[in-house]
Amino acid sequence: QVQLVESGGGLVQPGGSLRLSCATSGFTFSGYTMSWYRQVPGKERELVARINTISTITTYAGSVEGRFTISRDNLLNTVWLQMNSLKPEDTAVYHCNAHSTWSTQRPYGSWGQGTQVTVSS
Image (cartoon, rainbow, N blue to C red; front, side, top):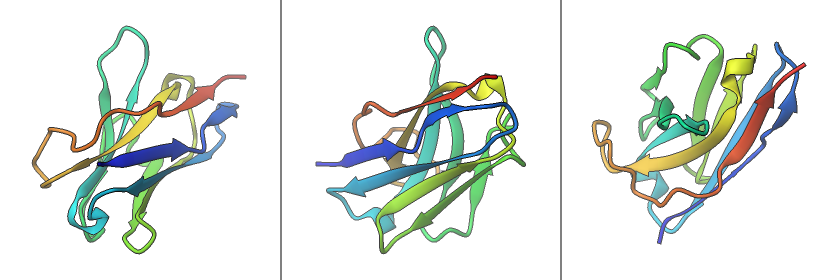
């Protein structure tokens, strides 16, 4: 079974930074594309960033490109999301998930609790 545990969220002022972590287990992490998503109440889940298996390709939502960086370590089975220059509209619950191929949209794991990011002054 796939286990995904997000951490690192919190309350931060606009312009601040946070680094989210996603610790994984229960599957061959190095063989899966990894993604970060975010969701606010009443809105659909948004794909924020995606990284391929060997960290040679990354993609970002236009709203975060230039401010967020996704990274991974296949020995630690962990993916991170470095968030800089945070804006109030970045406030959301952030989730990670795995995908069997780069183009696969279906998440491999169940959606967990995620980690809350609140950007407010």
